[in-house]
Image 1 (tube, chains in turn yellow, orange):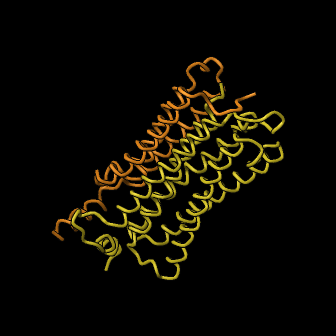
Image 2 (cartoon, rainbow over the protein chains, first blue to last red):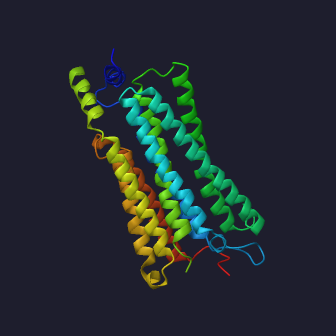
Image 3 (cartoon, each protein chain N blue to C red):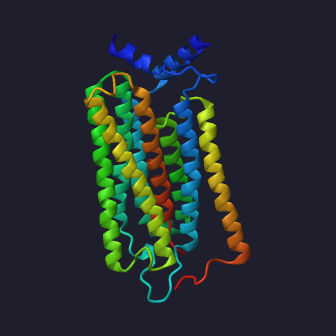
Length: 204
Length: 111
């Protein structure tokens, strides 16, 4: 079986009444529900972003490092490119290429999360903590949950690489890569919104 | 039926863009991000900053969803799932905003 045939065969695992893969349908339903989850957290942040008690630490926007966060945003954006290149490789049956792009995506994800941990540490030193004010709580819960999603994504990417190396992921298992890719791109999309709404839009 | 499914899936497999197109989209997204950050530092654009940033974020959002998540090429059903989630999130935001304007913001407010 050629790599192309294997790739095609892998997409023909399920036959459904809609003609669409059930696992992909479930992933999109999950991502739809995640929109609501992050929408609620972003709304909460917008409501509380300037709410601090006297002497309870800074308002988050006073201590943002925009150039630093811009680089983090760029890193996450580029990880979406490497993810989609991994999918493209797996669809062509190029397992080595897929592994390289998946590892690149995971590395960019680790860079992003590492940057976020550094940023959090800096903010805590500045006096902004999870419990210092409603603004601090809203900021850390929103960005922390996003970071947790990126971390879960990294684990899934590394699992894919591990499965591929132990032959549990056969050439043409493009669907699995596609599903994890959808999750990864969603995490990127959420950051697109967070970067604009939380970091760039000024507090009037 | 199964032949239809197979034909559809084969079509899906081959309808995704080439890597070169993905790279072009990524370059465009990087440029938009750079523009976002640049205009943040332009005092003359302060009055228009919020609408410009929102438009640029929407453009980035749509490009990632349509190209990288393949909503441009995939079944409309997937698009509906996602759009429903986005609309519900925007509804939550609108309801909270309405409550904010009718009942006032959370106390204690800003320094």
